[in-house]
Length: 223
View (cartoon, rainbow, N blue to C red):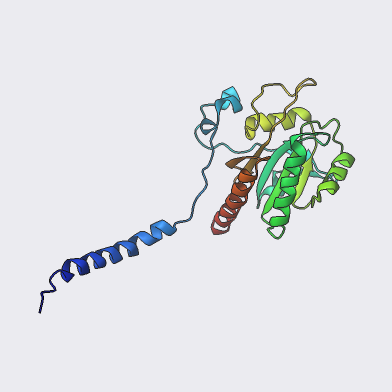
């Protein structure tokens, strides 16, 4: 009868492999977490010069805006929610319809998520009155409880875009001649921190955003 001593090293190898998999599995299964963006993490061209070197504790500034129902909205309306912010204008013929269409799809996908909202800031607030925003919202099926279309003081909105969300490349003072136009979507958590940037006209980025919304919702439920 031939020796079966060769089975011993194979058995040892199998045991070691099994033990390794037991310890490695929790690490492999570990859920993805989202980065917390600080000004120093963002393209400097997007960041106001006074904030470019800030490496910690950046949050979205307090705001006071008017939504499509004529109701004043503030950070209090988003206190328990994560949200996706963007910047648009109702008469935009190019990227805004694509962006708004994508938000409409996300709103439908997450219609039962009470802890997710959308905040679309008008960059032409002098033209985008409450009635204009209401009509625009109706066109895209915006639920005002989940998707808020906001108008307000132009300088306030532009300061938010440049100094809080870091959404636009161009510089300006929010004056009469100033104008911003960006395809960026920004994902914000319940602590008012930026957790992601996405191209609102890109199908790939919209799939990534949907995935990362789920991750952030899970993180919110655990906190």
